[in-house]
Amino acid sequence: MKIKLIYFNFPFWRAEISRISLFYGNIPFEDVRISSDDFAHVKATGTLPDGTVIPTKALPCLSVDGVSFCQTGAIARFCGKLSGLYPNGNNVNCALIDQVIDICTDMTNCISYPINTEGEANRKSFRESLFEKDGKLSKNLESLDSIVERQNCTTKDALFFIDDNLSLGDLAIWGIVKWLKSGVVDFIPTSLIDNYSHLNGIFNSVSKISRIKEWQDKKH
Amino acid sequence: MKIKLIYFNFPFWRAEISRISLFYGNIPFEDVRISSDDFAHVKATGTLPDGTVIPTKALPCLSVDGVSFCQTGAIARFCGKLSGLYPNGNNVNCALIDQVIDICTDMTNCISYPINTEGEANRKSFRESLFEKDGKLSKNLESLDSIVERQNCTTKDALFFIDDNLSLGDLAIWGIVKWLKSGVVDFIPTSLIDNYSHLNGIFNSVSKISRIKEWQDKKH
Image (cartoon, rainbow over the protein chains, first blue to last red):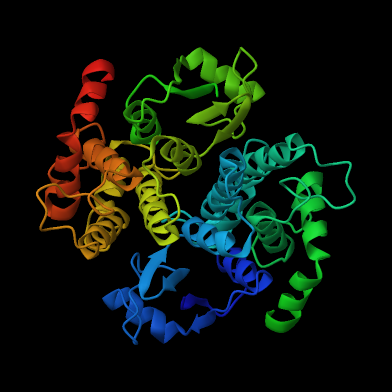
């Protein structure tokens, strides 16, 4: 099976969840990082210069033996199945993981500026509204923290979302927490995530895994 | 297995894809339609008055033997697996279907008015921008139509997304096309969808299925 994972040259969770899944599971893949010129080609034609179809003209995109598909969750599930990070046979656990991925997607989407948000002051005020009480980001973080809490893993030394095992659910949470802690999201305080102890628990557990450290040393 | 599908009392695709999956597959489920008072309770407490947890305080939500999860795609996949409308073992086909569901979700999200869009004129102008060339809705419809076209099913009498069989991919497309044709979305012309022949092909194929008609006669 020939797998190409196509994204930009930075470690955003939408691509990292799948890159890390494949790396963690020792699944060979081509880690394609495209230039802004290549992306302009995608926007204009729906393909990379080498002819690879990018179905939604957006990234990430996975190409498997010449069949391409986009969408973070679709790609992550495909990769997670290959690498043992997505349950095989427990459909409720699959759905619980899917729910986590989609909440992380909602959080990412809600942070984008609405179409007419011009100027520093408006942008700041928009972003600040996200983490007020009942702001979209606060509500998503609160829901996700409660979802992890209900999984009832809090007495373990390492906190994972499903039982004692790393899964795509953990990688999604790790990725979004890492992003929000990183300081790259303008006007969102890096301390925001400190309020969510279960999300931090997962972040810490995943960060300790040697294979995850190895990936970051190599690629970040 | 005790399944409750919780949504409002209308046939929006986010719930219909899963309701119809279960009905199509003769899977018993409780088709719970909540009132606006119940939803106010959910917003305030994260539970229905009977104690059912609604993890994201948003609907649809599925409860399976007391475990609840939200998110359209997560719920649809769970139901589709039970009813044979989601592939078992062909991971590329799973990903292609997941991609369709997530594009339909993106379309639904992009239609929502941004936070500061007040007044009829602004709302009209926002919605009209969606279906201009390069508008978000146009781009998503175009991508989705091309994705169906590449599946190469166009010579068949009935057009389905994966091989000759109904799947969640078809139900998602059918649902979103039905919604856009219905006239309930202000300022989006019901003729918009006429430009997308492959999406219409799937809409027509699904509409002819007797079990789908039976559901609509019973519930719509």
